Image (cartoon, rainbow, N blue to C red; front, side):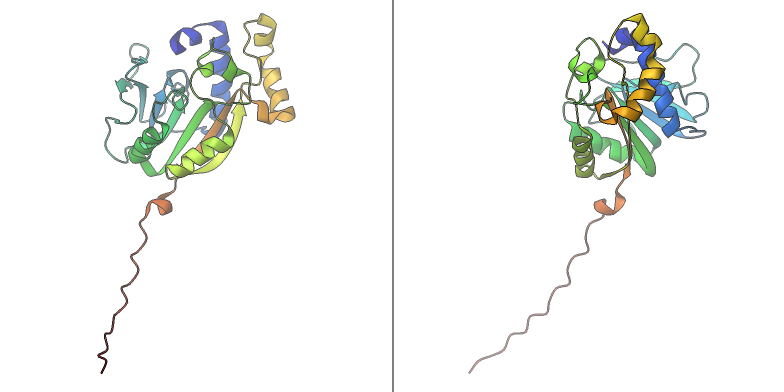
Length: 230
């Protein structure tokens, strides 16, 4: 579904608009290890040339999103809650077409927490339940569970992440009309200024809340004194 969508003119415009927004959030990942989960290959190309390593991981039921021939990067498939990577091995992780399609979002995010470095960053792109794109099944954003920004924040807090920044994208209608596609950048600028809450997708950047993960020190035991009674 996602591969077919991105092969169309509408998919190409969608990918370009989202890449432009993501590039503002993560402009330079030179020398870093990057993991893309869900169907992230169209967006990982932003950093593929400069990152030390880019890995595109798709859920087992979807298949593998392959890189162009000759690209010195990796693609693989795995269960979303059993990632085949050691602890603390990625500097950045991006989820696109991942959260809304997850069979168990909390278990998936706990795996993301495990493989992300303590100073790493997570970026989630998910369909906004208030936007038009979440309600049209002809795009991959119209499948699965859409989220509000508040719901994503609650889910991240429950899995030991802390939200750092929020953004939105895809303010143009999910249309194949050429005039709409040609006006995409103009519609994005207008949407960001006029109706930011109606973005087609929400973009959330989060970091690990390492202090929430630390166990509390056990309370000192109080000394019990027994007194004999006559």
